[in-house]
Length: 264
Length: 117
Image 1 (cartoon, rainbow over the protein chains, first blue to last red):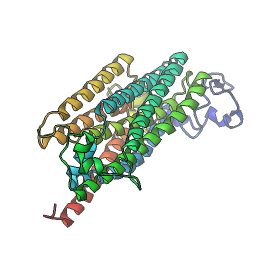
Image 2: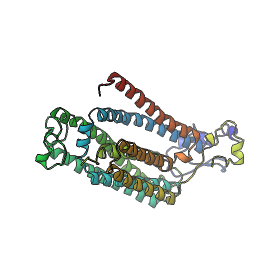
Image 3: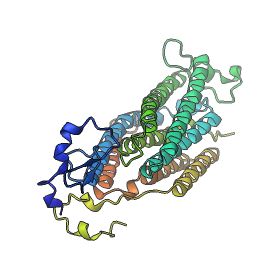
Image 4: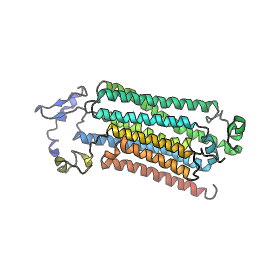
């Protein structure tokens, strides 16, 4: 069956029909072979096209693993070299805000997963609402993150000219219940905060790009483009969004929870 | 699962009708809800575990819980459990390569500073 498709492929006619609305179907002369126009002519079947799309998206995500992986490695190395500085600097982050943001991000991912389901079962309104909820939780995450960054700004914990180790060399003066660090070790807290901003910053940039894409996808979903069997953009964006979630699932324990069990 | 190959798929020598016989499986909202609950539960667990002094086990448990959550997200939210072998192998190869790169780079740093940490 499949081997004969190439000879009488109705999709050869797609090229000059590309201006069709995406959810309209093409029916060939015989009127028996209904194919959606999103099915490109260089794929034999829709399953094959779908497979190729998922495969390509995963290859992109693998490059993203390597991209974040470099920063995770830098973290691993410096954490082992300058553990006292990392432990004390990490304790300056807010665990309640970090936990809240983890929950917000998981909820956003849950809405995205439901959105993919809604597209598959062709429920247009559910899909649009799930994409809107995904966006809302994504923006909420960025908002909490911005609040945390602002607090670091006020405490001179942003690496650079105005970075201060005062809270780490003399914690008692700031009401912080920590053992003071020697000045040379206290300087290494700047490395922790550099990695903190690099990793959460690149993660936040991915979120912001994702939120931009979500506006675009929500608009297209609202026009009904993804509720007639064409779900690849929603599905592949879902893979991206869940990947960004996974990065945070590692960032949260590594950055926030290094040393919360201080020796009394 | 993948063994439920229908009649026309079984006669697909060029493997084009359904490549690798990946099934098009829908995860239901009920299953997604269970995954969601699991992820929230383990988020709470990792916070609680961080406040208990377990010595060297603290980072091990933190990373273990994070890895478990990541696997759950990959298998269900990202549908890898229901994808073809090609996609499964791609995902596995990516993480495997990542582990290899981390291990080799770490060995280099550790051996250069042997006994000095």
